[in-house]
Image (cartoon, rainbow, N blue to C red; front, side, top):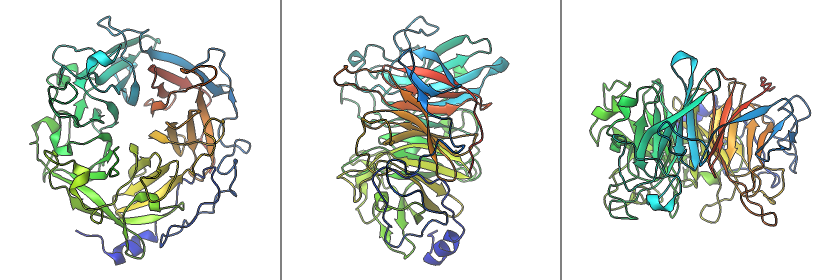
Length: 484
């Protein structure tokens, strides 16, 4: 059923702006016909716009780390949980490299279980530490990626084993309401391409508790075959929402509607047919009823777009990539659709940046999709960072989580300096960590992206990874509710 212009106008009256985040590129202009935020504008543009560490927001400045890994505020500390090429799995093989999306679960006997993606693309020979091909857990023996499950025990001991192997470019994903992890392949190579023996570009389910449930991995083809990034499940309505990180043309935000009467739970996805349910892409329009071709058109915090959903013709993309099956006037695109997290009754969706391939440039957006009102609201907007090498403004958000202390936590995957940073509900941003592990040279330093940001179930520990070489970290300290 289409969302009418009258419905959109009525629903929009109740939609607030929520998180507000200003970049460093100056005052942000108004999107044509967009509904304005009901909250005050951020501070005047400049390097301090949207940042406030001196009035009760955040945890203060970051202190250099003598170990050269992670700068944190005073009172905080970190612990290395896994380190590619140094720590080992239960099998004795080294922890795989290129850590990415992660979720935390309650495990047996007071343990915390983490499912950790490894974003490894192409043949196994290309990587020093691919995901080991554990018997019974392999999809394609030619592929190098997959997931590991990390158990953190009360006494501090750590165990790690393979959850799935033989998948490609496991980037983000998402946890399910029933306690499993959906890992997404950000690569759609077909069998016979780049040495692969099976088609890729799918979502797989990984159970952190029941190892037997992960045997004989089955691609969940009903979610479509494309360069997946993240997925979330609406626990009330049953829809799945997915992001695609692709360009030429820009990728899409998807909704999957389950078959009528489908009951979610552990293992139930395996029983579905490859064409089960309905996969759709969004068609957005502004408050004047005008079609919006790309989400980068929104240049003002609080912009609200109505959303209709258009059926995908061929979700398995046998001849044409899914995003190319639509004319540009049929759907709404966005550049670098990355991490998602379910919270506050909807899905927070990241568009990492936009450049020449988009109508407008930015260095990061976070949208909130409200399934009840069927609207997308711009919550976070980063202006183009003029000097990524300087430790100041943020750019290129990727993985995201909703904080139990209010607001959002974002992992930076931009240029130059890399941070974990927070954004409060009322618009202040603050640093949580800075990557100090230089994988470049002294003359040309290089710092890997952060990824896999997620809190432990009890909210006391923030887990995050430095993707290269692949380090999973546990951050603890005096967490506090962030003031509005």
